[in-house]
Structures are given as C-alpha cells and as structure tokens.
Image (cartoon, rainbow, N blue to C red):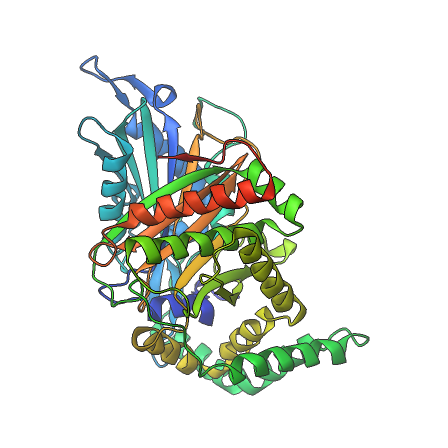
Length: 482
C-alpha cells in the first residue's frame, strides 16, 4: 500500500491549463447575492458588520466535502503532466477575501468590481479558488463572488459545489471543522516509476477505451458506428470557419461582467407553446440578441454571417454527480442571425438542434477525449493554438440546470446566482446561464476594451426574449434587468 497521494488530471482538465495565457485566465465564476442582515453582528466597537471570522469558520466546516479545495498543482518529472497533491501549507485566509463597495453600492459598481476580480489570475502555486465577500451592495445585500479554475470544475460539478457550500435550510450554528492532515506527496522517483508504467500500458488503455464502447454486445455495432460517423462529420467540416465579427478579436487582460435575470416559468411556457426545448428558446433568444446588437449597435451586416456558438453538453452520468473535474463535450450550433422573424428563427434553431441530437454530435468530442487520455496532449495543445489564430466559433453559450429549491448561507437565503465563463482565443464575449428556483440568470463576460458596450448586448438579449414571447403568445414578467 502506497504511503503517498496524488491524483492525475484528465486530459480535458489539463486542456484548461494549456488554454490559459496572460490575457486568458481560465477560471469560471459566479456571483451570489444574499440579504446582509442574517450575516451581520455587532463588532467590538458596537458597529454592525458582516462577521468575517464566522463566515470563514463556516467555509472551513464544509471543506472536508470539497477535498480538491485543499489541493494544489504539481507536475510529473518526465512528461510534465499536472497532478493534484495535498497542499501542506493550505491557509484559508488566503482564499477567503473581503471587500466593500463605495456608496451608493449599486449593481453597476458591483459588476465593475466583479470584472476586476475576474480579471486576476489564480496563483498556480496554491489551491485554485477564491471567495470574495463583498459588503455594501444596495438593498442591504452582500455578494459572494467565487472563482474556481476550470481545470477543477465544469458547469454541473460547479452546481454540485454550490449545494455543498450552501444548505437547504437556514442555520445559525457552525459545526467544528473535522481535523485535516495533508497526505505526503510522491517523490520524483515514485512519479517517474508511475509514468513509466503508464507509458507501457498506454496501448492497452487505448484498446480498453474501444472495448468499453463495445461492452454492450447487443448495441456494440450501433455504438461504434455512431462514434465513427460523428467523428467523421466533425473531421469533414473541420476546415470551415465561422465568420469573424467585431466580437471576435484578440483578448486583452481585463474583463467586464454583466447579468440579466429572466422568469424561467415564462421561458418554459414559450418552449411548450412552440414545441421545443428550453435550450432551443435560449439559443433563439441569443440569435435575436446577437442580430440586434451587431446590426444596431455595431452597424454590421448580418445577412451573410456564419455565426456559430459552442454549446457545452454534459456527459456526466448520474453516478458521477458530486465529482469534480470536467466531463463535457460540445455542439457547434450555427445561429440564424440573418433571420428577422422570431418564430422562423426559433424553427431554424429547433431544426438544427434536432439534427445534432440525431447525429450524436457530442460523441465526436467524447471520442477524442477518451483516446487523448492515452495519446497525450498534442491535439489539445494544437487546439489551444488554433483558437488564438482562427475563429472556429463566435461565442460560448453554456446552460446549466441549477437548484430548484431555496438554499441558504447560514441564515441568509440565496436571492440570485449569476454564472460567469472565461474567455479564450478570439472570443471577446461569453454567456453562461444557470437556473435557480424560478429564475434563469444570464451571466455575461467580455473583454474590457473590445466590448465597452456590453450592456447594449444585455439589453438586446432582453429585447429578443420579449419579441419571442410575444410572437408565441406568452405573457408575463419576462425579465428583471439589473
């Protein structure tokens, strides 16, 4: 039995380290808003304020359920592949930070502060996460801004972490944190030995991946045929690039953030009325918003644009819930930004997503990822380089189902939760969506210099939602712009 611990990053998790550069930090984020009163108590001077020490004690009491939060990166001696080891110098005070907005503390100032926080890289010598507790938000609220490197989480595992940090019922008690002892890290000799064994077993591992696809004898031929066909379609279309727009420019180091909350019940009613899915509604709204923004705000000709979004698709099975890391593939979806009519736009989106489902398009990415576990990072590194030189797609739009029930931070109910995605390559903006109770939040990240008019895009998305709902004959409170 070995007396040391380490955990090797998957190639997909490793990819997000490869994608990172000085102008492209690869952390995901979120902004949660809570009422301040349940988190407040009088200090030694008698003035009320957020009890930071109590908040830190609360986070510490939950960390045993998030072991990756006490681990840092190290690298194998020969291949230089990243691994996770326990951080013997872990210090919670480094990761939990405190700030206060100046008056009036409106959401314009909060979004500006979040953009600054989101622009800063995480220190690779420490566990790759931060939490910022921000006081002074108007309406007597407090914001919790979380940053976690994408090599640790995808959207689904990020929601799982939210459920670990927060509780389904209010509580004012903080349980004592279980004792934590870091496990010894492996020596260079031990890692080199394991690397040598891995190289020897690589052909066997690759063959095992193929056999795993064939494990169901009755469906083996169908499963393999689908993978080969999906991979062939992607490879056959690999030379085609999306149109370059003003939203597809080299990135600078600074970020803007914004968000928009929509009534999820209204959006589901639109999907039901039009005979599609919630994701079809989201993509149709995005198409209309991009059309309006590029045409009216940027004065661009949208009639012949080949505008594509990358829509991540979770491959995480039910048994994998609660595990960190990434388990996703993606669709590349052409958006009909040339279409004026919202109903025709929706029909085109619905037809496209139906075709992608029938063609099992996500299997191509999954096939590459499984084989890359045994063939190295060459293709992933090449993909990172191509993202900087070309425009394979124009925008990332990721939609993750969030908690349906109310969650609490100690005694404070979660009011709003807004997700944020990183930018890379020539993608100067990105959209993340997450549902919480009866709200669907749209979180926007953008390059500071390339997209100074980010809020115009937010308003264009809101307008597109209104037009689609009106055309579908659905009424209600569509959105709650901040």
